[in-house]
Amino acid sequence: MSASISKTLKRLPNDEVLTIAAGCFWGTEHMYRKHFVNKLIDCKVGYANGTTADPTYKAVCTGTTNHAEALQISYDPSVTSFKELIDFFFRIHDPTTINSQGPDVGTQYRSAIFTHSDEQSKIAKLSLEEAQDKWYPNDKIVTIIEPIKSFYDAEEYHQKYLFVNPSGYQCPSHFLRTAPK
Image (cartoon, rainbow, N blue to C red; front, side, top):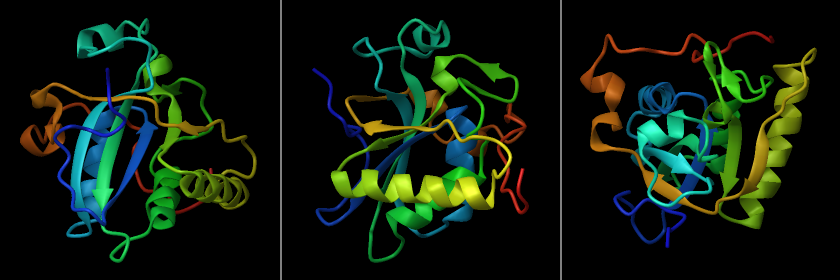
C-alpha cells in the first residue's frame, strides 16, 4: 500500500506538502530549489497517481504505469505560501501542452497539481485562472488538478540530479517566464 507523502521527505508537524508534475522532474526540482533557496524544508522527486505500486523509472518511461514524474515539497507556510509555490509552477513549464513538455512526450510528463486538501484544490484552481489570463491568454491551460492518491520516491540517483550532474539533460521548456506565451 502506498502513501501520498514521500517516506523520506523531511518535515516538521506544522509543515505543509505540495505535489506537482511539470514534465521532467529533474528540471522541476532544480527550478524550485534555485528559486526558493532557504524557503523550502525538503524536496523529493518521484512518481505520483499511477496504477502500479513501487514503479521504477524504467517502467514509468514506458508510459504504461500512468504515473507522472512529480516533485514533492515540504515547506513552512509561515515562510512561503502554497499560492506562491503554485503561481511559480505555472511560470516554469508549459501548462498548455497535453502529456508533454518540450521534446518529452508521454503521460508521465503531464502537467498536474496533486492536492493534499480541499483548500489546496481551491487555491490551485484560482491560480490556474489567474495564470490563464496573465501568462497564457492565447492558449488553454490543460493542467490536471486532482487529489494525491500515491507518491513513490524515485531512485536515489534522480534526487538533486541537476545539482549532482550540472551538465545533465534539461528540458528546454523549464525556465522562468517573464512574458506571456
